Length: 205
Figure 1: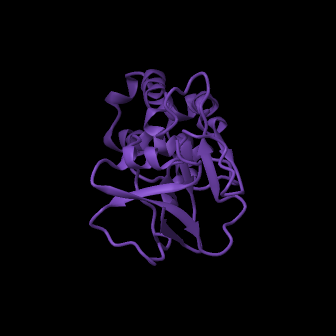
Figure 2: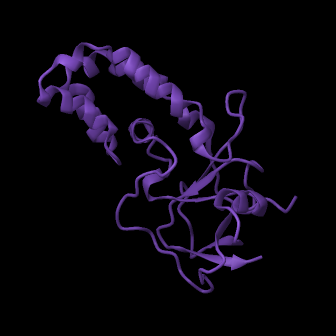
């Protein structure tokens, strides 16, 4: 196995040499995690952790980077432009409940939180008028801010009743660790994500 680091794979047709990848100006919805789960994770995200909607994602080995993107791609090592902020890097780490930490889409909460929320809401809200239904259904919208999620849980009776139970059930951030040294990635398998205010380069191996 190659040395552990921060790697990204891109299509072999894409030219990335000397390209400074700058932060996106707006949030990006997840492509592999349900919107409702992403919103709940953001709701409970500690302030010191990077925001997944503004983050780039990477792998700790070249092999996993290729696997994440698929064939016909080249692997590069991430080189940050300048100093990355102290809270900019984190990694999903394996545990007894996480068998596949390579991608957050495999995290058990992607299924568990959806089922729990629907179960606790029950069926009574189905008969509400459209304005009341919209308050609950809005949780399934992409890229809600944590403040917006809190407002929704306070604005609908059905959500207010289960607010604390749902919040306490979110454990995703207990499975994520922060680290500062790019040459000392904690785990050889877990998904990496990071905010990059000053941008980053992709350097050939």
